Amino acid sequence: MFVDTGSILGAIAALVAIPATGTNTTSTTSTVVTVNYTYALEAIAAAIAIAGGLIGTGMAQQGIGASGMGIIAEKPEKFGQVLIFFVIPETLWIIGLVLGIILLKGVL
Image: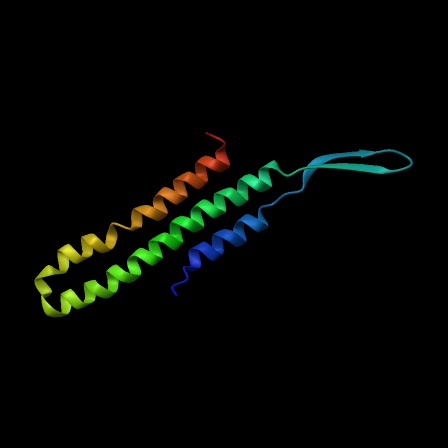
């Protein structure tokens, strides 16, 4: 099975970006810390969106690349068509990246 390194790096980046934001209230007897995990959950959602786009791109290009090489071996003049079909799945990771940015910026 094909594993895209971009999805792994995206998941690691989301886990590193999880901040423990909150308010520290200090008194003489105890310390109360309230933690807001909203940003952390948004970062994880963005990482899932980006990773899904990257994994989908890898799975699509896996089959297209293998069959495209067979076509080019038999008919080298079909290189342009094969290249176009190979590039079309790249839009999946672009859509995942845009969706991840939209989730992080809070546009929706």
